[in-house]
Image (tube, rainbow, N blue to C red; front, side, top):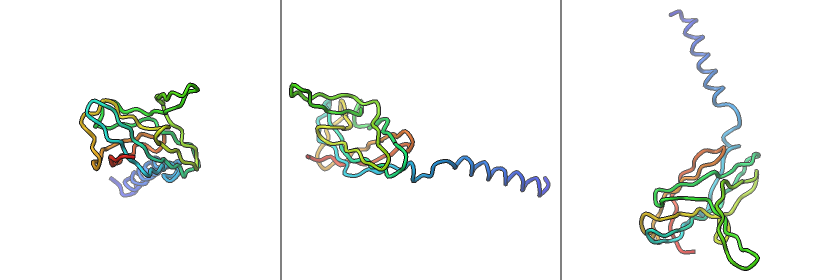
Length: 148
């Protein structure tokens, strides 16, 4: 193969790879997480995970789902107090994270619900949680189990 043809092929490949990486910079799609913790729980029961999500970017992000191998089901929930004073939980299809803001997952509000725990969750242990975002992709974290 001629040197000029090989050079053209290589330059085309580099251009295509660079184009595929274009678009919004990675810092635009970055979500950070802090203060994660999970409640202790018993096998067959439930637990909840809490944390704060920060979106320093200029575009809205949203948390689409969560998963963990510790539970049969992992869901995004919001606890709300009704007018008659009873607390109820409502599954969330997604949770928006406005640009330049933070969203707290905390007791009595948003949380990740761990349903039908596969084993006991004891204080001092850690569990793996995977969060899936609309733009930022997946984030895997180790969450400590502790009392509030």
